[in-house]
Image (cartoon, rainbow, N blue to C red; front, side, top):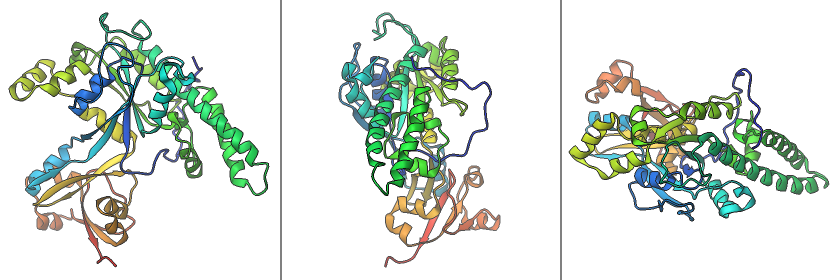
Length: 398
């Protein structure tokens, strides 16, 4: 097991650049050891027959992709108060990636292929088994979530070390040539990353500058990707939101955050989600009442969107209420470009209504909101906030 340095006290979180693709259309993948319920959960989340759930390792070989709708109470409310005839939620792309095994970074269990599949997604849902069932095979022959989490974390780190060593060899040759100041900076950065990885620290916890992030993003490191941990528990444990393994899992996640705010841990039940995906009407209501709660899907998707830095803004009217995804920190012109690229180029200003000002309204009344000072006009420097309803004013296309 790769050693992990634990903070004795929590330092102030440094300001740092966000790693990852600068895109509003990001994806996530279900990752974990083989046969922990990933494909079963994938089918329940996507309500599709994709994936290949089975009670043996490597039932899934090639990654499966599905587009899922993002549940939004704000969108439902906006559609109601605007009297919108059509409702268009935003979507999220989810991949079911084949299970990993110990030493997969060395090629065991088709490991190199599976690890390369992880490189294609932007965020990781790490699924770990948190239920006891002798009839369900475990690749390590026993249920131990902390051990399983450590195995996956170690394999991701070892693969990243392989990428770093390869890059360092290439850069070491390059810096011997004249006029390679950029290569020198990049080689120094690879040395820093290597030191972190050897200490068991994922790339994502580094205090990187914007310049660092631009370089690191070229390598698409596995441990640079934000993670949300999904503990697959029994229906009974999901109903009570308890698990005998949960305390140790949360402690492992906290220790693995190295002073950062711990990554989210969400209790899910593939068994319960499968039932809820197949039931309808009164049968579904009865089952949810029996559990004492509904599906965890919206929670886990919201956690991943937050980890990826995605927020929602809305365009609303009588014809349509539409939810759009944009990266946190995006300006109004950048949000306009999500609707249509021409709107970003010809952007003049935006009319904005805030969620806090609309959430208690029974109907949209522009004159009333304007009179109450709840209609805001912003220019090109306005930074969009989650829940904003935006109307874009643009010039005629040149």
